[in-house]
Length: 181
Image 1: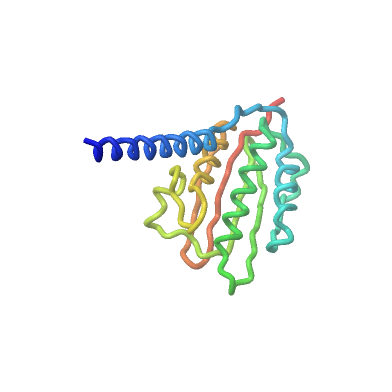
Image 2 (image 1 turned 90 degrees about the horizontal axis):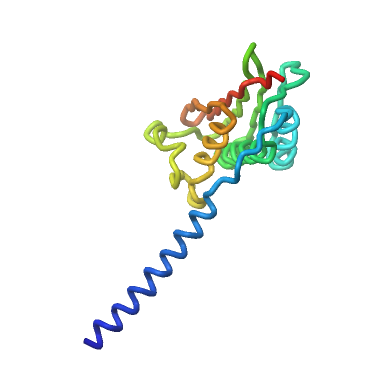
């Protein structure tokens, strides 16, 4: 009876600890409310690229686009591009000269941003899980980055997709509707 009581206490303590961890993870994963306002996509890209310029060669091409206004939440969009640029820089093997291209283009109704790296690529067996929460191909990290990115893009009425070739690199393509104000 005494042994069972000690065992029960230990189990309750462990369950409480796991509950605390789950609650903290849940709080971390919650996204703040998206506040959409007229946002200059060119400025967001310039700010994100500026953060990574010292780490790796980042090339930003805007194809002569003078303005790129969308309805967006600037801080969340910075988070999107910081995540994509960080993932790109981490995907480049140490022995390779890394180049990341950020290309902004447009058509009549939307802007397209391509974030392209010359890294190791994504294994085709992992394609279906890339945007799944808790999925990661890295030895560290929570596996929330691309899931959060996809959620943010969805909240901006945009879309995200990717193309990848093993040992050649990966491109993420993001589309955003133009602000019609």
